[in-house]
Length: 318
Image (cartoon, rainbow, N blue to C red; front, side, top):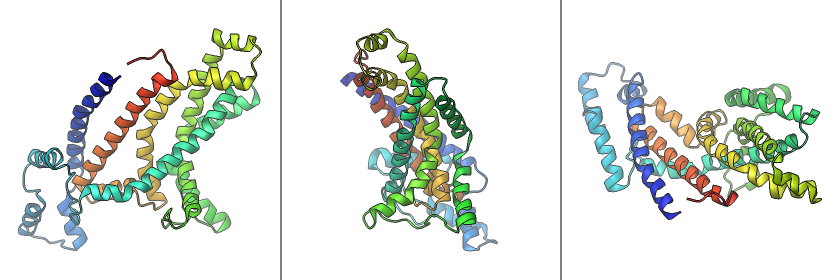
């Protein structure tokens, strides 16, 4: 087990290195640059070449991209810093620490809501295969997969205003000041963000439960006279859960991508909104730093999921 963990952790290093290069280069292929954005926002439409050159030198953009990348990588390896924002000069890790709680709360609530809905519905659908309830659950799951999160978010903002004259609060309510108000504010965005994840998890749970329920050991459990709850929870669900756990890990990047849109629709000051603002301003260090941070989190979560396999199935050993 220890050898496996060390090997997986070492594999993270080249993966993050490749990810950082791809993100670093891709944002520089976008039309315009940070200098144009700054001059435009400052109203210096007719800025001279001297103005641009001075700004580029001050921000370290007067050297080739590979030199900029080398400096940025040196800061990570030698100083443990992700660099500074081109707009204001704030340390990127300080931005991440300040805004991370909002994104964590949004993502955690989306995952919890999705699992609370998906697993019971998937299990019940498998236990009542080809009934009205099964068809209804499968239909709702397909609709959830086919409906874009951003469209649901926009509809959730528009229709309550049109029908009832009500709209969700657009200012963040700190959890420390009003816990119930904070959770209520995140409820609708989390439900929307978790819709597609819940639909996919429900379908996977149903599929795996149908497969497991046909196994000989399940027939033996039924033959012993065990009640339905015991057979499902103790014998079937645990063995059907490994692919479901894998799917949950694969959905994490999707939730991260969805948070970029949902945070902007509901005006939540999280990392997703910071990412979109940084892209609009061509704030290259912020975009690269956030992507590297998210990449590390995703790979760490997938490592934990791999380790969970040995608990769910004792036959799996590393």
